[in-house]
Image 1 (spheres, one colour):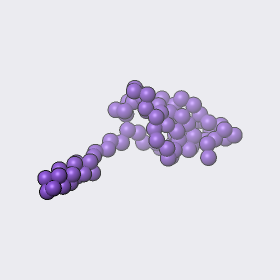
Image 2 (cartoon, helix red, strand yellow):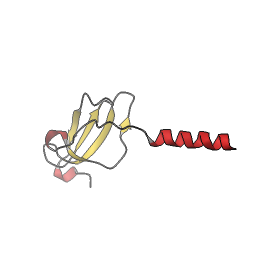
Image 3 (cartoon, one colour):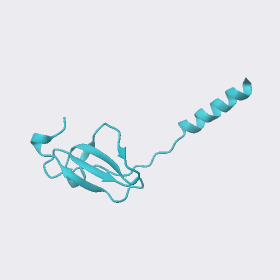
Length: 85
C-alpha cells in the first residue's frame, strides 16, 4: 500500500512539473491578436488555431505553426461580417 502511494505521488509530481514553451507572440497585425480560447488542432505536422483580432481586417485569422514555433503562416483573414464571436 505504501509503495503504491509513493509511486502515485511521484507520478503526480512529475506531471505537475511539465514545462511549456511559448511558440508565438500574438501582438496584432498580420500575426493576429488574442488567440481563440479553443484547443489547437494538430495534423501531425502543424498546429492550427484562430485569433479573435488582428489580420488585414482586424477581425481575426486562421493560422498554422509547427510545434517548434517555426513556419507560422496566416491562412485566412476574417472580414468583419465573417468574424467569429
